[in-house]
Image (cartoon, rainbow, N blue to C red; front, side, top):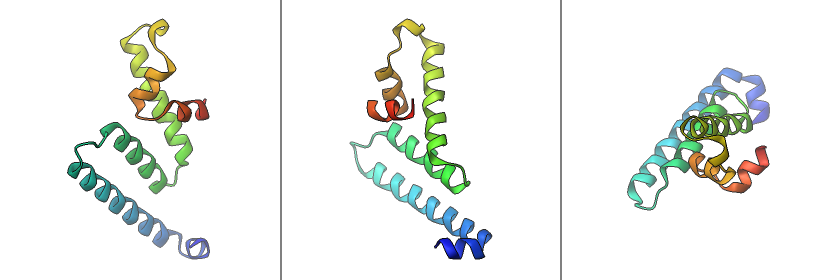
Length: 102
């Protein structure tokens, strides 16, 4: 794939985009079929998938996702009452993921 992407960067980007959209559609169908689906986790997956399709670093996209949710919580409540667990839950990730990125 890497040699192919180097020779045909535009075609590889198109293929990556179609695969990403296909995965997103598949995840949304599976999520709609399952009553146990957590939509916050789905939002994280979609954010990272679109960042990867755009050529951005998925780690940077996840970090920005975490920062956005932290900002929302801090706008709603005082800083003294917001915990790291609250931020992780609002972002739809585990506590360990939050600690990994900060």
